[in-house]
Image 1: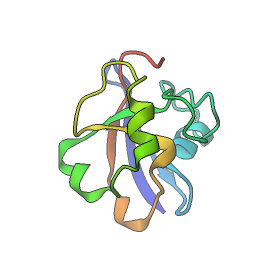
Image 2: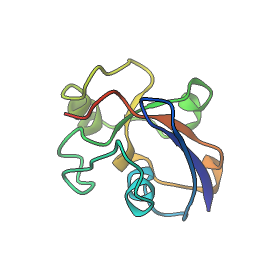
Image 3: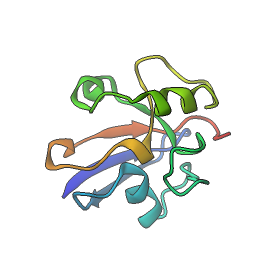
Image 4: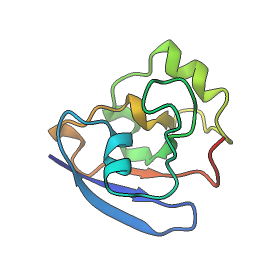
Length: 107
């Protein structure tokens, strides 16, 4: 289990425990975190679970695959090096303390 902090665009923080093996997107969905829509259900077929990863966590995440990179082209105001799709981030014990912030909107 990992404690993950989701920060809404307006600054409201939600700190929740997410079971190992789920994705960061599923953790948001299961805990009713606003700002992550996940329209495709986690199939990496949209960009509505886009977040900005806190800088101290960027290097600790698994590398992005080409499909995720392509989908981020459709995200709202992606930030190179910080933007990720939460459906592609598998929760492990190593992600305990992860901080992500939602963009102003999802598209």
